[in-house]
Image 1 (spheres, rainbow, N blue to C red):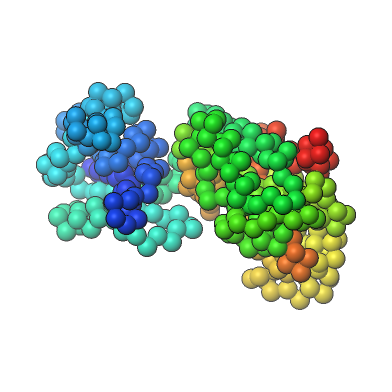
Image 2 (cartoon, rainbow, N blue to C red):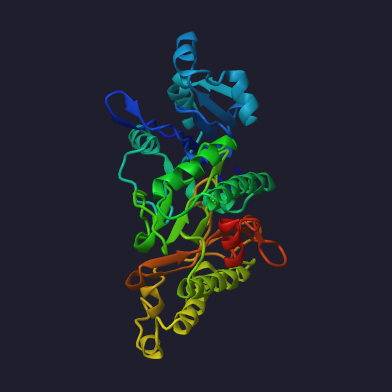
Amino acid sequence: MAQMRSKSIAVFNSNDIYPIGADSTLPFEQHRDIFYLSGADQEETILLLFPEANDEKHREILFVRETNEHIAVWEGEKLTKERATEVSGIETIYWLTDFDRVFFDLMTEADIIYFNTNEHYRQAVETQTREDRFIQKCKMQFPAHQYAKSNPILQEIRGVKEREEIDLMQIACNITEKGFRRLLGFVKPGVFEYEIEAELLHEFIRNKSKGFAYTPIIASGNNANVLHYIENNQECKAGDLILMDVAAEYANYSSDLTRTIPVSGKFNDRQKEVYEAVLRVKNEATKMLVPGTIWAEYHKECGKIMTSELLGLGLLDMADVQNENADWPAYKKYFMHGTSHHIGLNTHDYGALKTPMKANMVFTVEPGIYIPEEKFGIRLEDDVVIQEKGAPFNLMANIPIEVDEIETLMNS
């Protein structure tokens, strides 16, 4: 609210419940912006902020769906007005049916409305959302108002995490650790990728997670060279590696882990050589995540470190580097994705990327080397918190990553 322009209103809508045919729907997932700002984790909820409303009680309003005994029996408990205040800290609660009336009245006092558009750099949304429909209706109903964007403010404030948020992310990482340790004793030749997925899901849910923070990747052998392999239906064979990009959520906060382990419990010499190279890149990249670092420059430096490792592995030679295309450097043949992204309420979270990094931003660090001709790929990933001073704090420091520790646990 402090960053909003004078005489302006901001509105934030819940996500829809998405249908999948007949009477079936996907499980509800709250829009992370309204959840971040209000704590309200219920469908058909609207948050309205109007810092200069004439009536003080209208400066923060939460609209929730009116509940009744029928809804309580068929769908379960919904927010009452009293409970909505407890959850959100917002004193003024209206039923959703009152929104059009209240909103029209407040818009007569306002000159500007902030729309909550999705400007995430990876967004590729084709579905019309509840926010989209609201924006469309609002522009028709109030053509004389000015429009502004909530997203730049949200990118700034959501990117820097509060202590409470980091604590929740630590719990998500701890649950992920339990899942990973469980499967180290489970994996052996003949196990199917989906059985590993099942072991992880079991451990996550029994530790109060809703499940996976994102669609899990359990990629054995050459499957690891498909970056978004999610079929998870192949047999894990002796001598192969398994790349697992899989992690738990907790309280709507994500963790994001990748580990690569040997099906037979021991890396061969070449696998170990490449693994150690990836680990060195990860460790060097992590050191650069400090206040003041520019995201784009950081990725260039990570590319230089990776180039050096690929030369050492014999995957590149100096001619490849000298003749490389500046827009697609030579190292991209074996490491074609970025090294880090913001993480929080979304796995690929909001956060400023064109300005210097700040303390309490949380980033993944996830270099990889993918070698289709050798039929394996290796990626390693942790989640780290930028500190005001000193090295970043690794939320996954207790999750095994060193070759010796992984081999020992798999064979104990």
